Amino acid sequence: MPVEWQPVRQSRTHELVLQSIEQRVFAGELRAGDRLPPERELAPVLGVSRSALREALRVLETIGVLVAQPGRGPDAGARIVRNPDDALGRLLRLHFALGSYSLHDVLEARVVLERSSFEAAARHASKEDLDKAEALVVRMGEPDVEVVEFNDLDTRFHVHIARSSGNELTSTLTSAVRESVRPLILRALEEAEDWPAAAAALNAEHTELLRLVRAGKGAKAADLVEQHIRSLHGTLVDESAERL
Amino acid sequence: MPVEWQPVRQSRTHELVLQSIEQRVFAGELRAGDRLPPERELAPVLGVSRSALREALRVLETIGVLVAQPGRGPDAGARIVRNPDDALGRLLRLHFALGSYSLHDVLEARVVLERSSFEAAARHASKEDLDKAEALVVRMGEPDVEVVEFNDLDTRFHVHIARSSGNELTSTLTSAVRESVRPLILRALEEAEDWPAAAAALNAEHTELLRLVRAGKGAKAADLVEQHIRSLHGTLVDESAERL
DNA sequence: CATCACGTATGGTCGGACCAAAGGCCGGTC
DNA sequence: GACCGGCCTTTGGTCCGACCATACGTGATG
Image 1: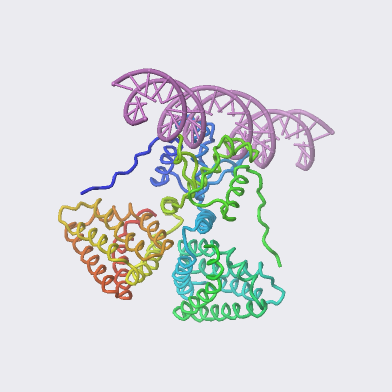
Image 2: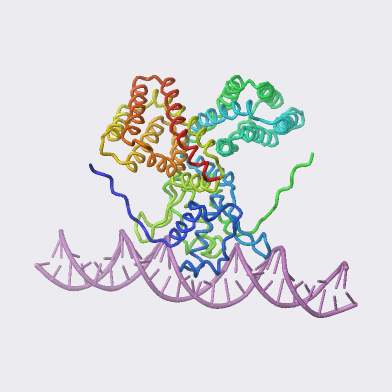
């Protein structure tokens, strides 16, 4: 059986450093909140230069498991954290821009994720969460809301519902996927012929979605959010076609 | 309305460099396959040191939009690529290890994503894709397959079906999510009381899944894969509980 | 006891040097 | 003229040492 050969490509000390730190994470020796030794101490211990170590730390920082602050005191230094959202958002945004994913792919992913989010939210969301979502919807319904703010509020509404579903992973994915098409949606909204009417129509769906979630009607909410997303993305397809 | 204040935290030149390169990507000026100027040329153009530039490049490399090779010729230098899978896998693996996501979250995400994958695969998968998936199932059915290889084949089977669904995004997410729990599943399989029987039972489901996909019965396949995943994860929950 | 200036630890940046790999170039050889 | 081998150049990878910016500690000072 011809198992395909893999390029070995070892070396690159910063990757070895990375493996070393990752192992500590996988082994549970490094946990969220822990601090790493100062770069000037850790580098010689690992037997690498400070530059190589720093590149490894930068990698960890970009995937949202580490933050670094200069200065002194308990908040200074490199600390292990859990912040996957920014990292995932940036990743998907860039790859979407590079054409790794088509608009259709993003649409389907949003439908799948948000159906799940709304269904779970109908079961698990707390009253506080729903009240906060309500505030977003109310604000979106005010007539003086411009496109940019509407887009921002819409994003926050969908992400907030996902968060309140109780599933960190799907809500992170939902957020990242929604963020990846934010500029596209913004452009589409800006080109709407009758903006106030379009906003009102979109927000009527938000109101109904929230009502269904409050009533615990997860299945109905899932169906409606699917239709909600598909109709919005329907106006985007033409936009993206011109990129080809 | 009290819009929450965001920490401004500017500076950090490597982030500015990052923004500069990202802008070129978003503007479509940098596309997959393009080469960046050599570090020694680009750094002074951007007005930063080579170190700062390199840290920015390292970030791009870790999110899978850039690869760098030393040497000379058309393949050398820093090139824009589209390889989100490794990046996403590493990200989810680390965050899962750090406890950003519970096993329950991963389970639900897998169910949602793979339901969609199998449903789409029943509609779109080519015969070649299904034949390759079949080969994986056949190999998994042979009696001499050990746990490690089985786990590997199982991963590849699920990912392959996702790939053949025609949706790059959901297949990437499926792959990454499946990878994030690979060590856990491996441990669970290793502790199975009657390994040959367990393997046979799991693989019987694979066979049936593939049959349903071939027959175009997407809905049935989705239901079965949900049950397939839930039952397997059911054996994992006990495992992860001991981590608490 | 409060205040303020200085010291110090920490990450961030910079410049220069050298190493390793790999294609290209040039000369030699047949 | 074609082939082959060694040197050269380009390019990323690494290392070192220095300095900067920041923010907390600390101790002098009123």
